[in-house]
Length: 514
Image (cartoon, rainbow, N blue to C red):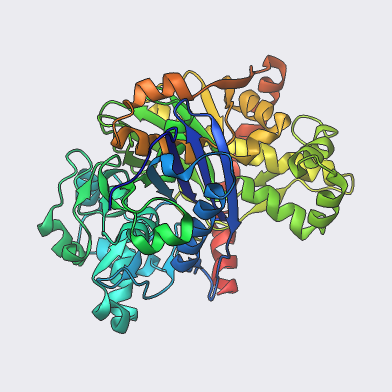
């Protein structure tokens, strides 16, 4: 079916499938946001170490939010030129040939496959895995999850035609076409991080059926058009191009304006961390390496499991989440928490928080790490607790940055995105702790903006550098404070020593909890 675009200004849609919810934005030809729609969905934790989501929730969230922005009245849906979808990392979604989801997907927080990883590494050297894939074998990645389905859910595995990533299962729902994009290849340890080629012999050694993973394409590749049923439900014209899309962290990095080597995105979402653009792959087992959604660039990443999630956890467990939301009265909850934390001194009166609330990824890679407050006294108040959480997440960021520096990465400033950017205090803490300027992206929707950019690039609206120049603006900048930085240097030395000292106890408690 042809698309009648007569008189309709160009619009691109970006769909962000995050951990806590889905967001879709519509942007015009200059990258201005025309409409935004959100949906939330649940995490399922049926057993210790298991963290799943129902991919049907991602699909429904995408369809509902696309329909909502198209019904907003702020643009003519006939002008939609393309759709880009980004998604959280390391999903493993079993679908049949028609794209029907066959089971919940273990997500990036899931650690059930640690025994499988240990078993694989007893026969396949870790150095061999790292040399090919650029990443260590960890239960967070997709590789062991596919093997888990074969062993533990043979009924599902027998019906599985494809194992898809988070964004690709939504793309298949929109188009009927199975795909895998290059920025998500790093979930599979048989794909060469340098070339993007699949090594079938490596897949066999690892025990992965490579035929169940689609051949990789560039994130800007148009993989298909919107199906008639999707068009009827959403209002997007049938046949509208849909690109393969990419990793949420990579799309957020693009949406923050990172298109040159050395530029660095700082992530302040559910997870925390950073993504440093590199012009060549640099493999370090302590960090995460993926391809950028920008051709010719790689991302050296540090990933903290519980970034802003740590603050959400604290407001929930101390019973303040609802009170703070009600009290905000139009202000964001981040502002309310920041006001409490701002009353506490630098270093929270000698209180340190380890943000290992669901184990930890880089650089310690310990599924049995556990969160901790160290330094509690009778004088500790809510302000100190909140500030210590903010400082602990900032310390984890510094830890990853220091490891990246030792691997040869050079970082001059941090381009910040995510919910944590709503807290000026937290941004200042990150600047003071790392000693780097922090610049907040002017657009609060940097990640779906990056997804919309992929759709624009894939449909001929320009290349990444051109679109960043037109679409991305820098917001508030936070310069490091020398006096606060000196205090954080002292605190960081304590922070860095706590994990090694507490590891035996953490592991004992993890075993006890199981």
